[in-house]
Image (cartoon, rainbow, N blue to C red; front, side, top):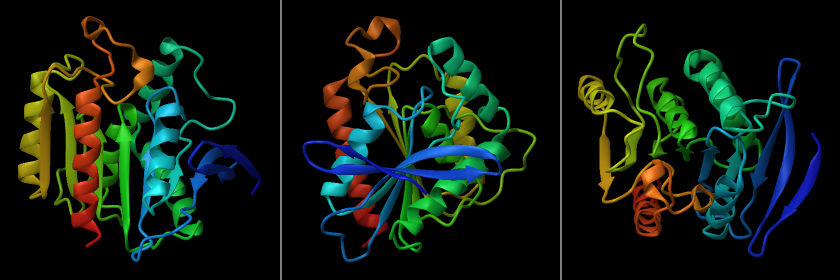
Length: 247
């Protein structure tokens, strides 16, 4: 394991090397200065470009609130996308092979626990492609209390039977996100009912895809844009969700 400090104005993250077989993975671990009584941990799954400023910012903010964090490296060294085209290709590999995606999530989950988080008090959050991963963690009934998907894809592997989902599920969705078709939304909601999940889905007015990411720009006509109001509201809802999970 190699440790390299990533410094911010409020907290610091450590670069952690771990492996999937021979594939080298480079995640980021955040340890709070004052852990909460539950020593709760949050696994963060980044969007399709891989570890980015949005996921790092989420980690450091959660560290300040007393949570352990780990930002997962899904792609692995040598496989990081350099533009939207390669990001689409990289993320599609995992969306079309959910077992591989789930394995990478589980490996990162193990790193979060190794950092000091209580294995009995874990949540998974994800952005866009990572939001899809958070839902896969719930579908696989990973040992986590709940998952949060921010503007994530809602599709699933339809070759797999719908089974009861035990982790609680929160989906924060842009009301104007045309990258997620209505048919996919209806299918997801039907899946949640059939899985007898404890789920919530909240829509944010005027928000499109990537509404939590400041790097997404401010032009919603492109379908990808930051929305400050939606970002703040969804963050507060997530914290409320955590209070329920870790009470």
